[in-house]
Amino acid sequence: MDTCFDVTVQGEKDSLARLAEVLGRLVEDRPGELDEESELYWQEALPDWLVSSFEDKTSQAKSRTWMRMWRWSSESKRIKMERESGWELLDWLYWFSSENQFWRISEIVWGGGGSMSLSISSADNHFPTQALEWLVEKSGAEIVSISERGGPL
Image (cartoon, rainbow, N blue to C red; front, side):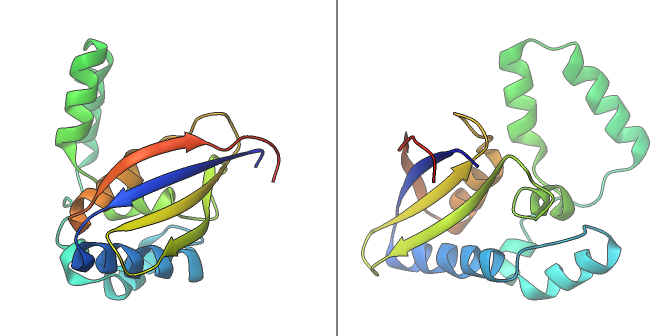
Protein backbone atom coordinates (compact mmCIF):
# COMPACT_ATOMS: atom_id res chain seq x y z
CA MET A 1 0.00 0.00 0.00
CA ASP A 2 1.77 3.08 -1.26
CA THR A 3 -0.63 5.99 -0.87
CA CYS A 4 -2.41 7.32 2.19
CA PHE A 5 -5.69 9.20 2.20
CA ASP A 6 -7.28 11.19 4.98
CA VAL A 7 -11.05 10.86 5.11
CA THR A 8 -12.93 13.38 7.25
CA VAL A 9 -16.39 12.42 8.47
CA GLN A 10 -18.82 14.70 10.29
CA GLY A 11 -22.01 13.97 12.12
CA GLU A 12 -23.88 13.94 15.37
CA LYS A 13 -22.19 12.27 18.31
CA ASP A 14 -24.53 9.23 18.14
CA SER A 15 -23.92 8.80 14.40
CA LEU A 16 -20.16 8.90 14.83
CA ALA A 17 -20.38 6.49 17.76
CA ARG A 18 -22.29 4.01 15.56
CA LEU A 19 -19.70 4.44 12.82
CA ALA A 20 -16.77 4.07 15.22
CA GLU A 21 -18.29 0.88 16.66
CA VAL A 22 -18.54 -0.76 13.24
CA LEU A 23 -15.20 0.46 11.93
CA GLY A 24 -13.46 -0.57 15.14
CA ARG A 25 -14.93 -4.05 14.86
CA LEU A 26 -13.96 -4.37 11.19
CA VAL A 27 -10.38 -3.26 11.86
CA GLU A 28 -9.97 -5.33 15.04
CA ASP A 29 -11.57 -8.50 13.68
CA ARG A 30 -10.85 -8.04 9.98
CA PRO A 31 -13.03 -10.35 7.87
CA GLY A 32 -11.12 -13.22 6.28
CA GLU A 33 -12.62 -15.82 3.97
CA LEU A 34 -16.10 -14.74 2.90
CA ASP A 35 -18.41 -17.73 2.94
CA GLU A 36 -21.71 -18.77 4.52
CA GLU A 37 -20.08 -19.36 7.89
CA SER A 38 -18.51 -15.90 7.98
CA GLU A 39 -21.77 -14.37 6.79
CA LEU A 40 -23.56 -15.85 9.80
CA TYR A 41 -20.77 -14.67 12.10
CA TRP A 42 -20.94 -11.08 10.81
CA GLN A 43 -24.73 -11.01 10.95
CA GLU A 44 -24.33 -11.57 14.68
CA ALA A 45 -21.21 -9.43 15.16
CA LEU A 46 -22.49 -6.27 13.46
CA PRO A 47 -25.17 -4.09 15.05
CA ASP A 48 -28.81 -4.67 14.06
CA TRP A 49 -29.19 -1.18 12.55
CA LEU A 50 -26.53 -2.07 10.00
CA VAL A 51 -27.50 -5.68 9.34
CA SER A 52 -31.07 -4.62 8.58
CA SER A 53 -29.74 -2.18 5.95
CA PHE A 54 -28.31 -4.90 3.71
CA GLU A 55 -30.20 -6.20 0.71
CA ASP A 56 -31.41 -9.78 0.60
CA LYS A 57 -29.34 -12.16 -1.51
CA THR A 58 -30.10 -11.86 -5.20
CA SER A 59 -30.63 -14.89 -7.42
CA GLN A 60 -28.05 -15.57 -10.12
CA ALA A 61 -30.65 -14.91 -12.82
CA LYS A 62 -31.52 -11.53 -11.35
CA SER A 63 -27.82 -10.67 -10.98
CA ARG A 64 -27.15 -11.55 -14.62
CA THR A 65 -30.08 -9.41 -15.77
CA TRP A 66 -28.90 -6.47 -13.69
CA MET A 67 -25.34 -6.83 -15.02
CA ARG A 68 -26.57 -6.97 -18.60
CA MET A 69 -28.56 -3.76 -18.10
CA TRP A 70 -25.58 -2.13 -16.37
CA ARG A 71 -23.21 -2.98 -19.24
CA TRP A 72 -25.50 -1.35 -21.80
CA SER A 73 -26.15 1.77 -19.74
CA SER A 74 -24.46 5.16 -19.86
CA GLU A 75 -21.95 6.04 -17.14
CA SER A 76 -24.46 8.25 -15.31
CA LYS A 77 -27.09 5.49 -15.45
CA ARG A 78 -24.53 2.97 -14.15
CA ILE A 79 -23.78 5.17 -11.15
CA LYS A 80 -27.50 5.52 -10.44
CA MET A 81 -28.04 1.77 -10.76
CA GLU A 82 -25.14 1.04 -8.39
CA ARG A 83 -26.43 3.46 -5.75
CA GLU A 84 -29.98 2.10 -5.97
CA SER A 85 -29.00 -1.58 -5.84
CA GLY A 86 -27.76 -1.50 -2.24
CA TRP A 87 -25.27 -3.94 -0.75
CA GLU A 88 -25.48 -7.60 0.13
CA LEU A 89 -23.54 -8.36 3.32
CA LEU A 90 -20.73 -10.47 1.83
CA ASP A 91 -20.21 -8.11 -1.12
CA TRP A 92 -19.87 -5.19 1.29
CA LEU A 93 -17.64 -7.10 3.75
CA TYR A 94 -15.18 -7.81 0.94
CA TRP A 95 -14.03 -4.18 1.02
CA PHE A 96 -13.08 -4.49 4.72
CA SER A 97 -11.64 -8.00 4.43
CA SER A 98 -8.10 -9.30 4.08
CA GLU A 99 -9.04 -10.28 0.50
CA ASN A 100 -9.30 -6.60 -0.49
CA GLN A 101 -5.93 -5.66 -1.98
CA PHE A 102 -7.07 -2.13 -2.99
CA TRP A 103 -7.21 -0.38 0.38
CA ARG A 104 -7.44 -0.79 4.14
CA ILE A 105 -8.20 1.40 7.11
CA SER A 106 -4.93 2.08 8.91
CA GLU A 107 -6.15 4.49 11.60
CA ILE A 108 -9.38 5.81 13.11
CA VAL A 109 -9.25 9.02 15.16
CA TRP A 110 -12.33 10.25 16.95
CA GLY A 111 -12.19 12.50 19.95
CA GLY A 112 -15.90 12.25 20.71
CA GLY A 113 -16.77 15.55 18.99
CA GLY A 114 -18.54 16.18 15.69
CA SER A 115 -15.88 14.79 13.37
CA MET A 116 -13.80 11.70 12.81
CA SER A 117 -10.71 11.11 10.69
CA LEU A 118 -9.84 7.89 8.93
CA SER A 119 -6.48 7.10 7.41
CA ILE A 120 -6.81 4.86 4.39
CA SER A 121 -3.81 3.05 2.92
CA SER A 122 -4.28 2.43 -0.78
CA ALA A 123 -2.47 0.49 -3.47
CA ASP A 124 -3.17 3.28 -5.96
CA ASN A 125 -3.63 7.03 -6.08
CA HIS A 126 -7.38 6.55 -5.74
CA PHE A 127 -9.53 3.94 -4.08
CA PRO A 128 -13.11 2.68 -4.49
CA THR A 129 -15.11 4.49 -1.81
CA GLN A 130 -18.66 3.17 -2.29
CA ALA A 131 -18.63 0.63 0.57
CA LEU A 132 -17.19 3.16 2.99
CA GLU A 133 -19.56 5.91 1.80
CA TRP A 134 -22.53 3.56 2.28
CA LEU A 135 -21.47 2.70 5.84
CA VAL A 136 -20.97 6.36 6.75
CA GLU A 137 -24.39 7.26 5.29
CA LYS A 138 -26.15 4.39 7.09
CA SER A 139 -24.57 5.47 10.38
CA GLY A 140 -26.13 8.93 9.91
CA ALA A 141 -22.88 10.79 9.23
CA GLU A 142 -21.32 12.14 6.04
CA ILE A 143 -17.92 12.22 4.40
CA VAL A 144 -16.90 15.86 4.01
CA SER A 145 -13.47 15.37 2.44
CA ILE A 146 -11.09 12.82 1.04
CA SER A 147 -7.56 14.05 0.47
CA GLU A 148 -4.41 12.28 -0.58
CA ARG A 149 -1.59 12.56 1.91
CA GLY A 150 0.78 10.95 -0.59
CA GLY A 151 4.08 9.24 -0.20
CA PRO A 152 4.91 5.73 1.01
CA LEU A 153 3.82 4.63 4.46
